[in-house]
Image (cartoon, rainbow, N blue to C red; front, side, top):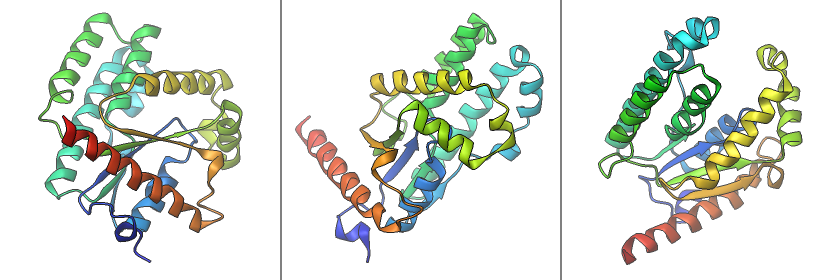
Length: 224
């Protein structure tokens, strides 16, 4: 069954998946793209030239890393819209400034001057009417304990060695960020309300919610 046509989702829609580590962004990206017949867009971590230096010296390389992410996500966003949409995107450009760059600044691993330069560049590039914002940001959320269980279950060595307090801080930062986010419409999904790995049919109610949110946001646009 073609769920995109069943629920009248535009073929040029751009959906972005957001949420903290372990919440299931990649799984949701693939499942939604398959259900809608859309392309996927994933972060290209392996080609990042700053990651190794960054983990060796946060203070020296945090600004370089964030500028690289900003440039790469900006180019990817442009490419998505040049293709004509029809994409599900894993992770948004907004998280870099709203969560990670802000965290480095607050912890002292990014200088005030670098942080101001970075945020000014982000505002000039992204927070303008000319930047193609997604039609919908889908935020995956759950309790800290539920997300920690998922991180433990998938067993990635680097994540297992990370202190629990770091994951707690990231969870809080994501919740604070999404509560004030307004760059595009947001659909919040609780990870306990679906299981698209064990039950592939559970993607259909999510597609239906996406359809309703897109329709509602389109009505709001017409009223303005």
